[in-house]
Length: 188
Image 1 (cartoon, one colour):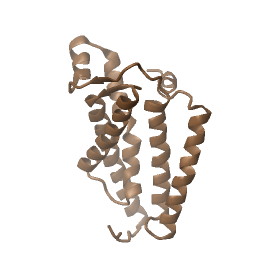
Image 2 (cartoon, one colour):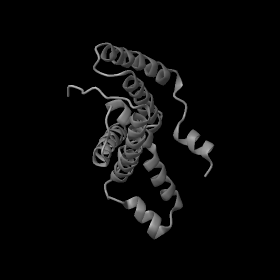
Image 3 (spheres, helix red, strand yellow):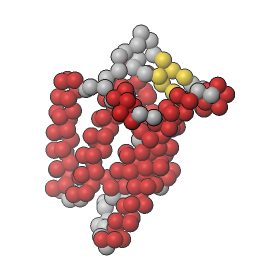
């Protein structure tokens, strides 16, 4: 698998408009994060994690929705695990590659969640957050006619986010123990 070709295929150029909107929203989001930090609602590491999540999710939305060419009509596949059937029954290796890439897609997002929320994220919560985020992406693809709405992607992205959340929680707890950082209780 050629990594460069995969990245360039799935991440086309944003263009001037996409870049401008990215920075406009980044400035607005950064201001909100700064206010939250100054009012002691979040700590500095949470601020960095939230900014990283924003940048990551914007990149995902750009590559999966905004830079795609609109189709004439919405496309959808409502059968669950149809992509695995295509792999196992018809030996479609491209489907296997897409399934693996879909699992990997939201893994960094899951890794950032424990840092942003300043607590351990259970695998169930990571799965639900990932599936919810993926559902929004798939719904945008359906509404804008810029991709295939499919439940398989929601499941695969959710599993990837879950794996990232488990890994991120493990790293986050090890970091707390290593540096003996005491957490302040948050008013939830």
